[in-house]
Length: 254
Image 1: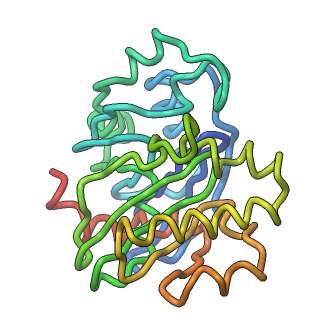
Image 2: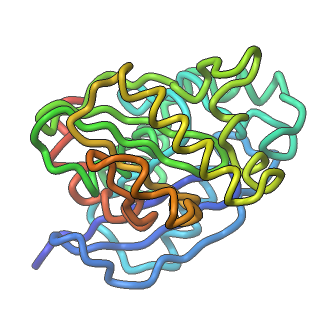
């Protein structure tokens, strides 16, 4: 019998989960809950466990979380350290609780199955990269996610979202969901094109994938202007990538 993988995509505003077979096909439609705030690490562990209980039993799990994740340990995460979610006050006690939290061990014990815990853009990338050449994945959602692959191998994570792009403005702020709503999709889409043009000489990618929940909001008139080396991919990759992540990353991140 094929092994089943629980795949969980944790975002700033929502947490989605589904169970996939070995080919990456969803056995059930994804279920979603709003991200509960204030959110301690244990509260997220419990929320994921509750989602898992509502889905077919899986043999292993892949969880994508925003922020800097190293070997399943949270070094830093945005949003979850805030009192009520994105763009609200940072709770110093939550920040301390999240820093250094071994999410992989906590989830493996709670779910009683092997777990991979990765940055959410890395899981997204696992679902779309070709595995050849230098490939970059950018995800557009609450903020900006980033993952880099060379020949299908995952490069060390960088928090591009925290880089300054305009004076004291970071990419998270400049192209995040709050700014998209303020600008409207047309003006926001132009910013995406500017971002791609400015990052191209930084990465010199062979291929750039743009995904995340807001990738579908890029105006059709702007898409051709992004370049032939840019591919818009569906947000479902954040779930589907949960299966392929095991073959791409498992040995590299243990």
